[in-house]
Length: 206
Image (cartoon, rainbow, N blue to C red; front, side, top):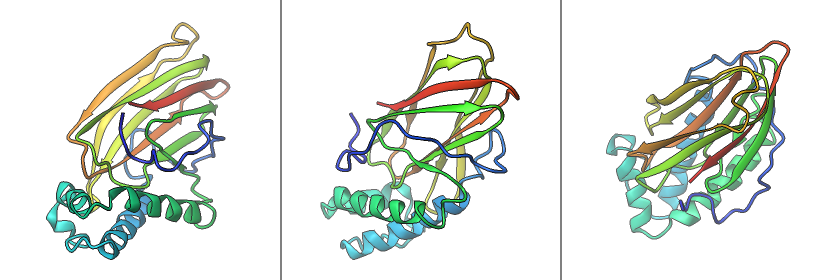
C-alpha cells in the first residue's frame, strides 16, 4: 500500500465537479494547479530543512529524496493537503479539480460530455503504483488520461485509453502499473464522449 496521504483521511465518495473547456487526452488542463502545487511544495520542503527543495534542476526524485532524508515527508504531505483545501475552496473552485488520494476509492458519475479531473496534492514517494478504473454503471463513453508532472512543469502522458459505450462493459476494470513514479505529481482526466448518456465509475490506486 502506498503512503501518500494516508495521514489525512477523507471521505472516499466524492461529489465531482465540472471541468470547463477541458481537452480530451490532454495533460495541459491541470497546468495552473500543478504549477502552484510544485511552487508550494518547494516552499514547504525548504522550511522543513530540505536545502535543495527550491532547485527544480535537481530533479523530481532528488527533491522527494531530500524531504525523506530529513524525515519530513509525511509532514510535507500534511501541509500540502492543507494548502490544497484552502485553494480548492477559493481560486480553484472555478476549475473544479478534485484531490486524488492514494489508498482511497473515488466514486463519480459523468453525464454527457462533462469532464472530471483528479490531482495529487504532493509528489509520490514510492517508485511505482497501480491505477484502476472500474465502470460501475451507465452506457456512456469516456476517455481516461493519466499524466505525470515534474517539478519544472514538464508533462508526460503515462496512460491514455477509451471506455467504450454501452452496457456490455459494466463492471469491467482497467488496471495499469505506473513505474518510476517517485518525485512526480500525477493527474487524472476523465472526459465524457456521449451527449445523452452517463457513466458511473470508481477510481482506485494500489
